[in-house]
Length: 191
Image (tube, rainbow, N blue to C red):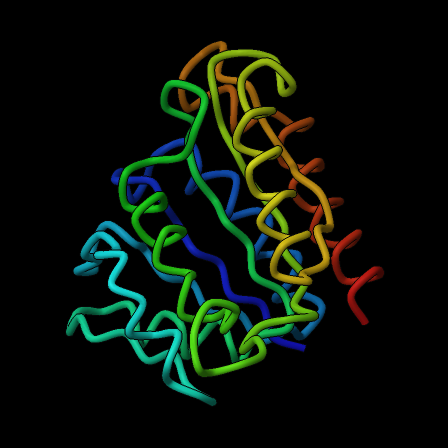
């Protein structure tokens, strides 16, 4: 089994990274292969809406030359994809949003090519935000659930931690055990 964690935070040692650290420790202890990609280090151009990818069968097919192809390769080779992001104004960060908009080439629904390069993948969310889970991260979760339905992906849930005391909020026994339990939940469900 392979996990691909897509980190959307621009802060490499910030709150979301702290939650992911404990999540990944649990995966490592289970012997799971894990790829951790920080999106802020990558060149991710916005989708141009040109539909060129929709006419390329069997591969991603985007005409833009940036880092998205290598990210897509990791997504395709993984069993579980985790979108990890702080929530800014009820949605993900700009780098995460740009990547999500570029998912288009993974689904061949609108041109000469047919099928999906990622149907059946398991998708999960790790979010951090300043509100309770539903109010703060609910809109982002709802968007991902719709993406999963449209793309025939398996949505496996969200682990969200509220920031009430900056980094200390993400180092509490509850936050740490929650991240570890979420990892175990995904391992149990995605075998």
